[in-house]
Image (tube, rainbow, N blue to C red; front, side, top):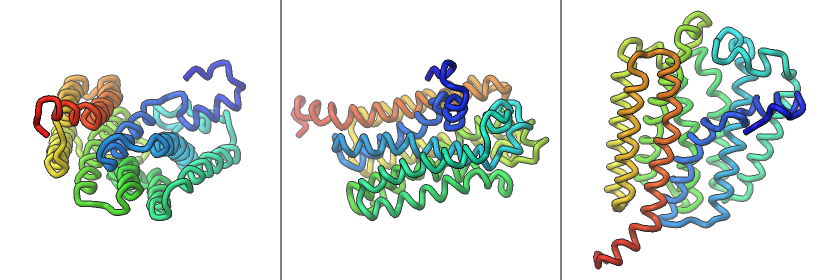
Length: 300
């Protein structure tokens, strides 16, 4: 998104919500929309897709604003975050809080279009998103809390469509959580030296020199959980091709981050946009093409 010619305050608001950097939104969007398809057992209601897509954008933006409000005294100490609007003084804390309220209200309006049970689940997700920034002060596992927050939309999708959370939904949630912890550890490796100086905790610091090994274990376990989910739900060929595509990106990420330098780890992190897209594409193709292929070749 080009925001260079926007009024300065508007530019600061857009940057505060990361609307100029869509990577995080896409990392949340692909698995959430895949969850809507999987919960629906095929092509979902377009209205439901729109609500979850817009809700993803609002929730992620609100989470970023809250993160920056709580981290405003720390971001200036980290190379990657020192040019954010609050450390630079481009926007006041009061304005940031009003912006968070606007985004949170937008999320609430969308949530009110869903079932009451889904709304209750969404409230839990908002709570997790709000406490996430605090976790890096008290625990070395903030990436786990982020994984829970970013996977919450999967649970909402199942509650909205099926009015319950089947065992397969929890398997999908677990796979998503493990994947997110893995890619956010790549992200934390970018800031590891700065975080150590600033007293900020992360899995990158906790894992130490075993970081790449543990990322690989997390990724492999996530793939195993996705295969288990496919077996539980009788997924088709395209679903497994999507999972295979994910595995290929994981291998590529380890090549990118093999030296553990900032640039390589950051590229390994951003490559997960393709990881999520390939899974989403496999789910969509499986919902639309695989049933047609089965009918064409006489398997049904």
